[in-house]
Length: 351
Ligand code: TXA
Ligand code: MG
Image 1 (cartoon, protein in one colour):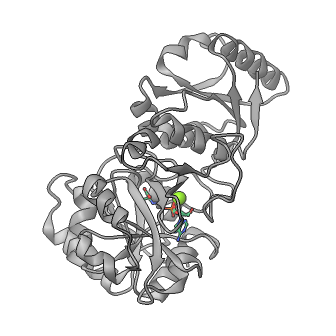
Image 2 (cartoon, rainbow, N blue to C red):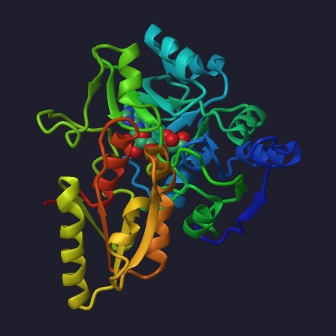
């Protein structure tokens, strides 16, 4: 499955050239795999109605068949062919947030092959806003199953270079359309339950959703220690992991940096190569140490945009461990915290 020649086609992210879009759409319709930019992260697309094409996604990513993928559409008129018993709330939310970084879990139509949803009776659907994604979906005119375009368990791909690094030789085409703007994936909301439930925090915040859904539930046990319950399938796996071990520190601002410095020094003494992911205003706090430093930027939006590419850049310096600390968990911070926690395989160093 790694004997393909992967073509990388540079495309205008604002006004995508129709000849490239048409080429990629033809490949999708023929059962091939096309990576394309979305506003969240790069997606690895296949015709969602073609079970064999969907199987190829799992093979290319090395992804377990038990981890369902999201179906992408460009027009609400496509929705009834994908999901059944669609609640009014789905249409209200679609009017408000689509196209954009919000995914609905609905009941799956029998038209959609079971492997898209790992055999479950539900299906996840999203309408992306990135002009390249929209143009591709329109030209292909089939719903497109697309997980993030990274090898399984790796940090999500936010540029064509990341996709090539992970999936070169395994997929047909990469549409190279610049860096994904948001940088973390869509928010997933399950609309099949009595109470709408957020399964994964992402590009649309809880705070924004709550203004439309007063009884919104949040299932991630990591966000509210008192809340129990299962998470989205696929969420249970090791995820977003750099090759280096990632150590996530948590605590009040005044003790975080001293604790991270002490830990870094200890690791250096043990002969480890240490890297740090830091917000811009903290870069100089470890500048005297023999460590690799990559900045996450200043604002929440910048940290979200940079997070996965910063993990990959630090990895490329050959570090053994990556030290990072948590940020505020409101707004986009909830998605950032969730990704950091999974990259740290659920371990937090409380200081
Ligand atoms: O922003 C995004 O959502 C990106 C871009 C490419 O659209 N896609 C993405 O896909 O993040 P992926 O495969 O990396 O994450 C999909 C996750 C699965 O791991 C699973 O947790 C959840 O979506 N999911 C998919 N189908 C589901 C279903 N039927 N029920 C519950 N969760 C589902
Ligand atoms: Mg993913």
